Image (cartoon, rainbow, N blue to C red; front, top):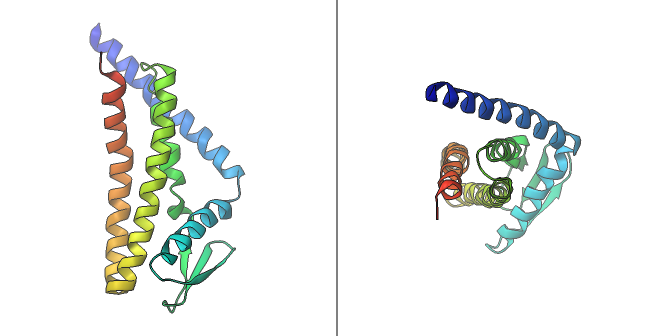
Length: 169
């Protein structure tokens, strides 16, 4: 009987993630993608100015950042925005039905802040690696950080949030 109950809870959780993920992806798709790309491009460029970089932004799809020190522009596409990861974090935390709603909402908010912060770290780090060590090193670090980004921000955050939200006083 207990096994059947656990299977039901798991099914409810997975169905909740699927429905919420579709909903959040739909809601995010209503907003022009360029706005999200521009958000990351603008703040990345502003942060890079602290390191002495100068450049301009071209608002198009994808949004391009032209740095004076690079011969080709940096393209900020859908994958740079972290929208997929945001939708997944929101879906997973909010579909954790056994946890009180307040903690699920807090988890979604904190997850968003952590995800956006780490995404900026990933982008800026990749640009700095390209500037300091060349394009091949930059491509390697970008690919590595992207994969770490996917795992750490989603699985790592969810694990820590779940432990926090289910611990008893």
